[in-house]
Length: 261
Image 1 (cartoon, helix red, strand yellow):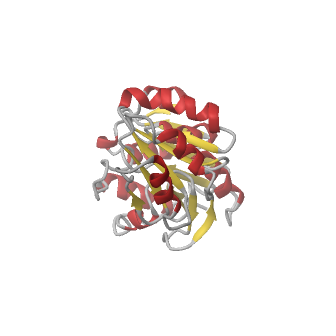
Image 2 (tube, rainbow, N blue to C red; image 1 turned 120 degrees about the horizontal axis):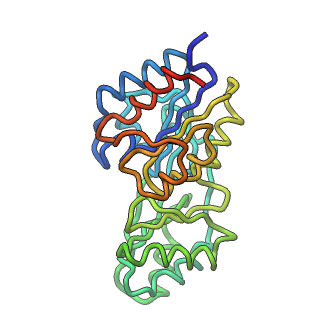
């Protein structure tokens, strides 16, 4: 019996486990993850990144639970190679684009198909742009908008009012809005992992820093915000730990080691 038998730990990547966009994880985090796993815990990531991106880190740490990717639009195997659960968006998303693209402050819209994100068609009429997006390779998992920070929250409120019955809306960074299928997201995927675990899960731990992490932080037995998290994440969390720059995941595991649940 290990100290962390029955535990499932999910962490965001950028700004929580790692420096944003950098292929490095602190030695303290890596050692703590290995200890957590050796004591029976299951450890994985829940991120807006693609499975291919996560595989770049697997010489540093090895998840031993399925990966939550694309902000909860895809769950895949521990090695990142096999989709286990997918939330696709269909042509109805073009109605959302018809609403978004005429906004003069919209920098760009990306389509995510799980491998590549496609840049916005910058020139042409609205009809030409919609035809361009409609022809992009499927499957489609999410789209990501980019606009000045001051417009992001008001725009997201409008999107939720108009399309909230079809899609989830959240943010991974201040200038972006992510749009994915209703019923997806990190919190929904946490539930899926618990329900499909080969071994019973009795304690879930989640750690994050931005709005897209709130659903899993609220679902978890204990939800952690790193100290560099935005205020809404701190308010949603049960506990606040150190900054991602100070090996936050290692600090959480040390705390759990001293005071197991």
